[in-house]
Image (cartoon, rainbow, N blue to C red; front, side, top):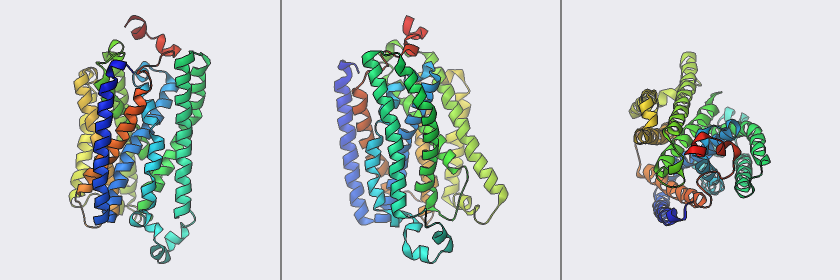
Length: 390
């Protein structure tokens, strides 16, 4: 990190922390007024910010495997996002106190009256739920810590073998990441409606995490592009590559989400179709249309253009819009499962993302300040024409 920029980062970090704490205090007051409403809003906000951290881990491992030039300009951003996972593990604890408010399977009276819940009781129970969550975070934090440690060691020592070590971990790490992130989505979200299931539900969430993290990284790198050392390296080619990758993730997310819809809708089974019927009734149908338009159609059409991908201000708006729509998507997925009164937006639905977001951004900025904004001695990065002649 350039020392001249440190005071500005310090100010932004303090403001993010103050805003986050103030919003969480308001959320705590909301919890006293309406405990179920608080946990519903908290879960949506938690999924959003944890998804960005998880997506950073996935894209970071993908970058280490393929070594594309696009990855080096956002590598430090991805590493900083990954290093917030211990914080997100800590922030999961409030959800353990809200299991009865969120999950039908955690209520003994509901389980006693439901044969299916009794059948699933060996898996869907509080202690095993907490143990699985601990295991997921252990895997994510363990992989992320090793990647950050070896990257920092490479900055200090320039040891050539560290690149190979990062690649060797990222291969099986991506497999573990995909497995654990999919099961986490099943545990944390799909089990909100324990009578419903989808075989590709975890993949939908996994791709959503990657899309959100890449959108966040693009927004952040464009904001930092005018600062040293990024200003001397980043070019329209980097933005074009990042825009192409964003387009690929937008298409992949739309393909997986539509595949799930098509399979369930065409099957028209009584145990599956109500999931979509609930999310198409009343105001929820308008949210679904908004997602189709703003989470896929408009970004897809804009990202087909070379101009969009090479103009920083346009790409910034597209990536920022996708990031906002990811929060809307999570609201559309979670809220109908836990609210029986139809579509509405509670003030806690706004305050919870702001509160967790302020805390998360403060932690992200703190980690970002600890390291140079570009890798110092990665031989693949040093060999690129942009670095040799930029």
